[in-house]
Length: 415
Ligand code: HEM
Image 1 (tube, rainbow, N blue to C red):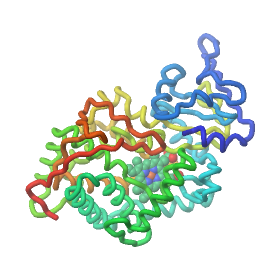
Image 2: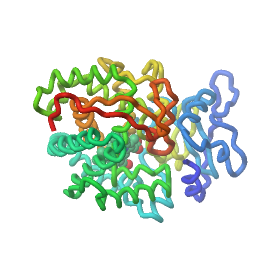
Image 3: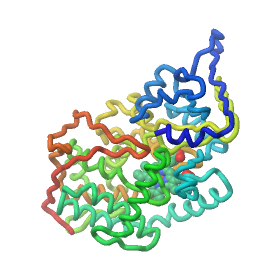
Image 4: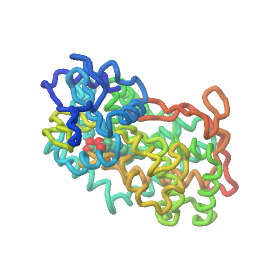
């Protein structure tokens, strides 16, 4: 994934990083990343998939701040929350630009997308606009829309579970097209949704690190892990359904105004986000001034990536991290704080966080109130269990592999 991007960067000025960390105690120098070859640097060591796992392994040898370079482009990999917080949050004034994506940004034309823009006056004014539109009381305007689209999603899922993944994609695209253009999508084969999907696919091909195109078609691929988690953990599903049934009186569907009264469902949503983060390495930041951090001298022009996946798998904060356990968020402020890194850092953190959470929450609550999800199978039709090795797809956006599950309507169907 990084390779493509780094070729785009190979023309950048000779960037140096003093990565030799001298221990103040014994004066011996130690390296802070895998040994690099002349010119190509660490190109051959870069993993081809699931980079976040390799980066977490490197951290065991080289520490939480790992340095690599490819064709002269320095890359700093942050593998713990404290380092990511110190640099990307505390020093966000100099860690908030974006690397230049020649192929996706300039050739294909995504350079004007907020998510890819360098830190500039134009970027700041667009961020301010987004903030106004996507925060506070403004968000409530979208509640009826989220509720209606969630109902349609669950209705479709119950009608034909084999189309679950398509229905979720349709849901995500519909919400955005309605909010952005006031356009209502057709139930099937909507021409604009199909076009948007093609654009996303082209962008993904052009440059994986930027495959987010976040401001064009933000997605909720997290709804996919939700259905999978419920099928794998029926006891969680029952507990969440019991809470929904207690709060949402028979004859109506959940609403976003019910959210404060559904704390367990809230924890289910947090756990869905944590369990397999949608963007395991977030989006790359660019350091635009030299900086000193402890023994490290970090040079302007370095790409900085936080390993969100390894932060969210830290057993000290999330015991048994591979298990889906919403209870871990009940009354645990530290776990809740750590989990905020799912939405990124500092001045580039996701401006759509509250919008995204509202949309996810109501889709989850509606599904829990209306259906039971069970019997998960893989693409070969074999049963999968919570102990199966479910390898998520690699890329800037990490999706679960194709799976199927059965979805039965519950007795009180309110559509
Ligand atoms: C589950 C859903 C979502 C997740 C997990 C998510 C996560 C992220 C992450 C990790 C970043 C990069 C942050 C960084 O660079 O430090 C980001 C950026 C961004 N997100 Fe989201 N996002 C979600 C949904 C949304 C939605 C619904 C919107 C819009 C309504 C949105 C708009 C954006 C924009 C515009 C950026 C670029 C910000 C910038 O570069 O300054 N996102 N998001």
